[in-house]
Length: 316
Image (cartoon, rainbow, N blue to C red; front, side):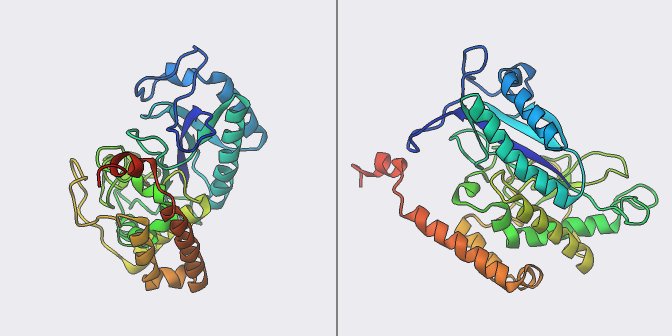
């Protein structure tokens, strides 16, 4: 696995009713627009990131690159490929480390899936591959270096079962605000070569590094459950020899055959009725997880939002 963690830096805010604002960088200014991949924009927070890198090194976190993402003051940290459980441990520790480094510099770091209106959401993209235990060679490529049947079945399993384990990848009401067309987030489980409009992207690589990027998980997901769920879907595809759909060329947003559940309620219901997911994750886990998420959702429904007061208070 190789996770990519997206997050926002924001001004610290004590009032949850107020929208989040970009923090002030070392230049004394806020970002005013999107600056994807900008080195200067990332350098605005060099003192913070220097602490983050130092603390990660002391803890043995194998982080790779830091980039400025599309959103205003949105960043992304990439981890090197490695053992799934080890990477889950590292991501779990990194999130706390990042938040502590931000607080030291009087800003906040948030891993909410959609913390800022009219900005892209934050994902936890999961690059996953499988190698032969004895040879170390990728089983996703055949002897000619092309996509193997196992690789295609792995993708087929992701397509079939991700909608049934979606609450593991999108565990909160806020998670589903990310899944909007043209917001750098997928809305289905279509797949394609170097196609970032699909939920499943196959990056261009050599035969040994062939992998699939699951773009569905949000940065707010429990990393252990997201990785386990994503690998389970691929495993089921290989075991059941599930063929994928044809790869998408061009925009995948308008495709409707492989859509996701639109709400947390619908996703929980679909997971609840999945016999295969209950079989592999255990009935006890599925029952307990869904019960917790439904209680959280009931709490959410008791909150009256500022949007409702603004648009309904005097007009209905």
